[in-house]
Picture 1 (cartoon, rainbow, N blue to C red):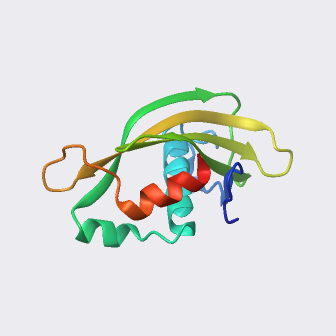
Picture 2: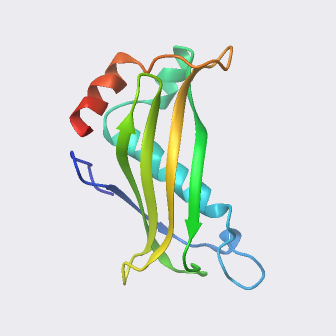
Length: 141
């Protein structure tokens, strides 16, 4: 894991386990979403923001939109590198570019543009990003 700085993608190493694959040992397509979710969560954590604290303040984050492109398969026991790079933001959402690479050869396996919206946990309606998150975003955009 690395600490992300402005203009640099956060990187999270992940290994492919049997539970991630189909009967042929190839990563099931939905698992890439799990990997990307983990990388975004760890990016937030690396910025000093606790997601549990947000829940206590009626704040949650949901994927609003995602565009995914599968390029090559990952397989059982592969070492992967999953990135999360903040590309844009508004008062209520964050836009990430995410990629999954083979860790050894940096071969691009999957990439996505992901928009994550901030919502009020009790109503599910959009709400402003918390002040601490807005400050963090200013450092990246």
